[in-house]
Image 1: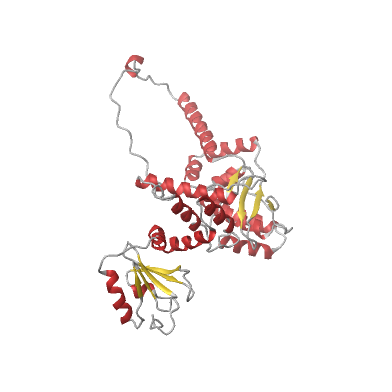
Image 2: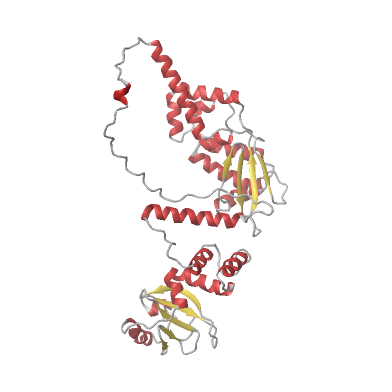
Amino acid sequence: GSWWGNAWVEALERGALDAKRLARGRGYAEQGHVDAITVTPGLVLAYVRGSRPRPYRVQVRVRTLEDADWERFLEAAADRPGHIAALLDKELPQSLADCGVPLLPGPGDLAPRCSCPDSGHPCKHAAALCYQTARLLDADPFVLLLLRGRGEKELLDALSRRSAARAARAARERQPRTLPGVRATEALAARERPPLPEPLPVPPHPEQPPVYPSAPGGPDPFALDQLATDAAARAHALLGTGRDPVGELTLWQDAVRLAAARPGSGLTAATRALYATLADAVGRTPADLARAVAAWRQGGPAGLAVLEEPWDPPAGRFDRARPLLLAADLPAFRPWRNRLTHPRGHVQLRLGRDGLWYAYESEPGRDDWWPRGTPDLDPVGALTGLGIPDDGLDDL
């Protein structure tokens, strides 16, 4: 979207050897295959998900500027106040980029490297990282300056010192003025201090953690990423509401919550190790954890309680459910505590303490109930979408 972001993309595409790899890399970037990006002087690093379960480690190197180049850049930026104002507004003036310092890369200046077996220059994973980096440059040109060797704070401090020095030189050239003085004893005397300023507003979201590199014998970078993301979300909620949303959970509930936060469902190859570790930590089996994750995704802590805690509901909502089911041309469900079971034994409704009905399914003749569908205040509505042949729900 910005002219400097387009210049980055042009450097990538003019230096590429295969347009098809570029097209696939652009598709990967648009589909969100690029995980959190880490930018350091001379290096962009990220993990990019490809066709294999484990993402590839991708990096793109860019030459950093020499000290003499930075001196020219700082002089050009400090020479016009509009340059500093534009940078603070996350804009890169064209005149500042044309000051004789090679800020923007040209064809062949981007040096990609990927852990995939593809020897293309660049491969589709590296191309995806470059396209995603262009979006970062659109949002903040200081990312480009950091890639060239210096971060935002360092540059702004240097510009501030130069501006102050220029202002001091200009003041010395003017007619000196007599300034009123204050005795040190008066300046340091005790006095009533003004009240502290109001706290800063809570950030809109907790941001993303950095990318954790994989090292032989080291911790799993994806497990670290999950724990860091979870800790940041908890801290953000505590900062905004004054309470920890996880603080009152039991060890088992927290294990289920962590497993449910992992993308995907069931014991897939990507989640089997996580499920096994969490289940072992709480003395349960991975199958127990998988069933509990399904309940958590269905209704959170309330859904997990419905899975594990039968209870005796008071008269009222539970008693009215069976006539409602009969009115929908369903057979008479068998009641037991807070549960209503289809006479064929393959569909079950459970009333939660939150007043919602939770649907479960099992193979006929087996007591192996799994949460299905979405909780609903209406027992018939909770069964919508479940396979109940010839029982009156075909038109729901």
